[in-house]
Amino acid sequence: MTLPSPARPVGPSTAAGRPRAFRLAFLVPRTEWAYKPRIVATTFVIVTQVFLYVLLWRALYGEGSQTVVGLDASQAITYSVLATLMGTGRVVLEGASQETAQSKIRDGSVVFWFVRPLAARRYCAWRGVGEGLYATAWLCAGLAIGLATGLVSAPPTWTATAVAVLSYALGQVVFYQIGLLVDLTSFWTITSFGVNRLVAFAQLLLSGGLVPLWFFPDWFRMVGEHLPFAATIHVPVSLYTGRIAAADAGWFLAEQALWGVLLTLAGRFMWHRAARRLLVLGG
Image (cartoon, rainbow, N blue to C red; front, side, top):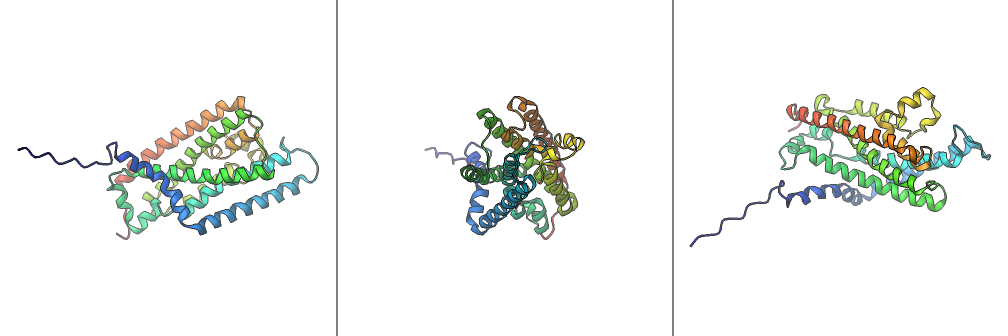
């Protein structure tokens, strides 16, 4: 009598393992939902920023219907509200996350990134998808409230809506890759605090998250529009408001995709180098 051969264990590289990796994308939203005070704090930050931006633009434009650099008060408010929704939720999330190379190196648990069946790069990528989903949930909720209250204007056409959605998706890829590159510097510097502060300032200024790039001098705007930071907020919001016509969206979308590819390649290179230079503190 021949005994049946034992069943082979299902590894993470098999088809049964892929759904488990895919579930990592939902880990971030579920974790944040479990900590209600974080949601309350993020809501407070966003509402406060939106309130101050509305006061600022209404004070600058006054009661008239004048335009500045081709932008009226309604467009300026719409831009600032969307920029706040796109940027703040993700920035607050990244600041509260403990799943960073910097924190893992400091407590010694970074070694587990490289001994898991799932590669560290894929693990972080799936978590990045989850961060994007979480940020998108904030954007959709805020946009719905803004449209219902009249604070945010609707896109001029359905085509503008479609290209803005596509641009936003590409911008989230660039957003993740920029954050990843900053975090990976911890493998060489132990802490990425200084680099993070510098990049955070550049992101806020050059993405149009603080002030629309149209208000800057022409030379500064032309340079800023072609940097990866603008791909995260300025381009999607400009397409939404119609400041960039849908007919001209092709070049901007291609540039966003190009930055996504270049930053992804840079990230792969840094992951490869980081695996050879693994520093473990505290363990």
